[in-house]
Image (cartoon, one colour):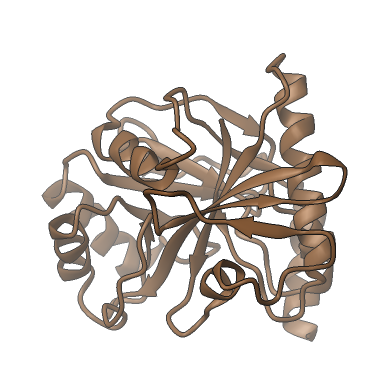
Amino acid sequence: MLIDAHVHIHPGFDRAVFLQSAADNLARAGAARGHPPAPGGLILTEIPGADVFDAFAAGRGLPRGWRAQAPSQDPEALWLQGPEGRELLLVSGRQFVSAEGLEILAVGGRPEGLGGQPAAEILARLGGMGLPAVLPWGAGKWIGERGRVLRALLDAAARPGVLLGDNAGRPFGWPKPGCFRGGPPVLPGTDPLPIAAAAQDAGRYGVVCDQPLPRARPAAALRDWLLRLTVQPPVFGRRCGPVAFAHRQVMLRAG
């Protein structure tokens, strides 16, 4: 399955455009790799207090023509069915900001109350819950003191289940972050910005999961795969160019 590993559904997004674009982008990426037609997946890394996953699970907030089906054995996943046979797997997740200002993603669960704590404590708490943790790249967020904290965390938490994240907003041509070389596996995702144009971005960049994700427990199977992952899985899609990066940053600040 092709999975966009870092997704937000921001309040200003047209959800019909978002879901249709995500399904289409993932389908095109799969066809380009020669995969047979199959649904793709999105990891919804919501900030604390956001409730899109819960709303969809309750049948609220879905655009016309879409419906959600909860797997029989997995409360952290939803199968979304839309018009023209479109289908998406939605996996729950949370995004926290640590005391040091580093972003940390929890995959396949929705723990509360971790934001603002030291990054090492957040990682330890997620590990104790059996949840994979992802430290995602962000423009300017891995330099200076935060960069030193990141390197120390990776040295101290060198174990499966603590992963790095890349996103489509890191312009191609930029130097690769040093921790991407010889560090933990990297999970790419689009990490859409809170601007209207980004509603079409989901599904353009991500990771290829080569393990079966049973329909009855897909989030649990994905968690298990990530907790065991020690080698870099294949990546699909591409990041933005420098001009697009600059334009999106201007739009973000202007909004």
